[in-house]
Image (cartoon, rainbow, N blue to C red; front, side):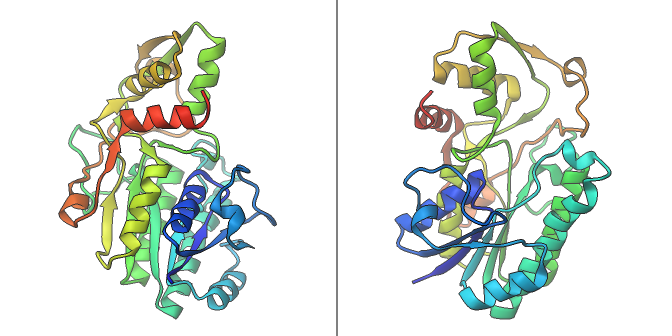
Length: 305
């Protein structure tokens, strides 16, 4: 039976990966920095399978856990993902410790025992300019912010350490366990008659439930390398995304499109072009994720909105 250690199970993706492993009869070991699992208390696999407290920035502790658990694969979902907060100077050493050093620690531990590794990355490794979709093997990196730079450095740590790795870039993530754009917009939509949403940043959302299935498909193979994985259904703006969310949730809130400039600057620069080319998935024989519109409808129902 395949043994899989999952980091960051207190977050959106790690939670769903554990459920997918459980569904398929694999042995999942969940880990996160909290002493006990602190995520959504549904009847999820995280509460049915072993959980270990793990600080990925503590190299010795990490190596102990990996050598004790002897996973065949580590799916590394843990990350610092607060994009604006990452710009604060006092946070930057911590962001780097988690996204770069922690990832290097995992890659080193995987190398020691010959385990496969999946590293979850982001569209933020690119400069977000133009309108052409980014291909997985494009090396034209130029992150716009601290978060993007640390995720890129994490990618390089994995690629320079291991042969058996998958680097999977995702964007606009939503899942049951944690905060995300959909939950935020539904809450805002319930209390406001009108919302202003940017329409000049373009990409495609990723539902962690769908992504988890793909990641487990991947570890069943040795088709290593860089991949892009978001839901299908075309490229959209955050404005389009919001309209679909309100449609699914039955809200009549008016959605007004604005430019990023009109919306006002956030601390971290955001990419205008987050179009990710996913054709490599199909070329490698993997089943793509369903359309994002379908994912939004399923998700809104799942969270009871």
